Image (spheres, rainbow, N blue to C red):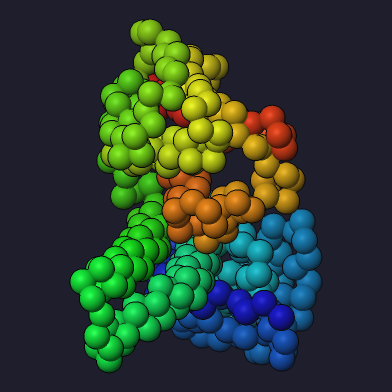
Length: 359
């Protein structure tokens, strides 16, 4: 059974305090439907009878925004909280020992306060999901680090225990150095992906970013491959700037250019094309003449640490496309993939252009 997100008690207590004050009632709080019955979270003030509260909460069905009970024994009002999947059903409840009227203004206040409490639950769920993703990345990274670490330990022990001539010693040291570099790439990629997810869009430095300048930076990223002469640029003139973080956009474009150059046939052309798209948006296409992707590979393309068939023959960590996808998601960009085994791959990005809603 899926665990429920931890309760954001401080936020719920603040909502209960506001409900008690704004609605003028003796008690207020959050009732939770649990396996053992109705539980109370962040309740302030006078509490109703538990059995009566349980019956009242059970009467609040889906589609009923508000219910109130003015029967003998006091007044109860409540509304279900909007919340993420996996959250136990919760109700914001008000209680007064004596019956009382409950007008439209108070109903509206209760609905607004329920929305605040629902946002608190949603925030807690997002924090939990982010923590679980980061833990998964670290677990996967530890697995990826075992092989290079074992190589480093094994070959360094050989160097310590046996004598080698200069050529043999150099060969072993080169292996140790290469494996240490591989470990560093895995660690850097893992931490970068975790930072992107933890920081979210708020961590981006959104600015007016010309696509031409972002592509120039991306070309610098892939220049060490020595294959930039294979890139054919068809850049539309006069494009509006993108609403983007310049460094992160260049990083994302560098990742897909690197993949296109590495996985396509030597000497083949990789087309890079830009255009103005409806939205307003900016279109970027990277089209290679590589082997294309089977459906099962395409379905896992953006999965962290996934490396498809043939990837073991190239350098990489399996994190590049996961980082690319995260950067694009944070920019509210749309990704389209057109690929067929044996017929190459066209990856299209539709990126928001700078407009009045971006700054």
